[in-house]
Image (cartoon, rainbow, N blue to C red; front, top):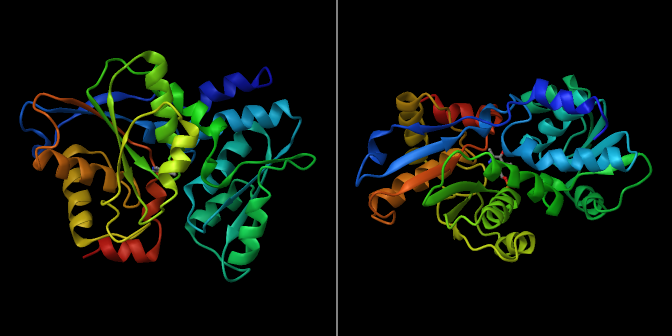
Amino acid sequence: MEMGRIDLIEHHFRIPSPEHEIFFEPFQVNGIRVFIKRDDLIHPFVSGNKWRKMQRYIKDAFDSGCDTLVTYGGAFSNHLLATAAAGSIFGLKTKGIIKGLHADLNNPVLTLCRIFGMTCEITSSDEYNDLKRDNSRNAGASYMIPEGGYGHIGALGCEQLIEELQQSYDHLFCSVGTGTTLAGICNGLIKKGFSTEINGISALKGADSLMNEIQELTPQGTFNLHRNYHHGGYAKVSPELVKFIGEFTAETGVLLDPVYTGKMFYALSDLIASGYIPEGSRILCVHTGGLTGLMNERMLKKFSR
Ligand SMILES: *Cc1c(COP(=O)(O)O)cnc(C)c1O
């Protein structure tokens, strides 16, 4: 990154992110201790793993002489908002290609993207999928960040999370979308020589190619991919999940999002209750951020009962 830009990282991002123990009654069994890596506190809008994944792409954009970041996402994508906010910090223009039916599509996430200066281009699903296929090709001054930040460059940035750790853990839990964060964590742990058992909790239903896509980014990595905690599918919630998020947040002061981190902590709770986690384990949960997951009418209704 250009000189002078380094300071910007220090001024805008809370790195290393805090790491602390949490006390939630259902977790306090069998001598188990649960800690949390607060990547949600790194930045309000370049939240959590989005900054970890993005940092190397931004460096690469500068190194390639590009002045514009282009990326892809759904209308409520944390990744789009993270790109918009990060671009504004580093003086890069940003363009978002957004999947949507109507050109006048708007919501609180897109409004924030526009305030941070992103040009939002709404495209139909077909058009979106065509454009996305081109995303490895950098054109002129535009630097393409793949959808969801998926890729080796994204995973590399996530290794830093492991370098920051103040102690070692028996188990690590992380939410999974594309699996880029999980892959980076696996690679980071291998480099450190830690034998932590890694658990990824998929936020998606189905996604048969997910395992291969993650393994592509971490050929040596070994991890458990839990695929039965999606609560109906991506961005879907069940009444049990809504109840769990409320109880966890009220007791710990740590707000969870319903799309990713809520499902991860729910899974941990279930795996502790079922005896899957050995006695006396020390567990680290990565809070990957994502609190904009609550910022839509449908989700607000689920939580207002
Ligand atoms: C995007 C996101 C993820 C998924 O990260 P991947 O690296 O794509 O697996 C997890 N948690 C939160 C909060 C996110 O916003």
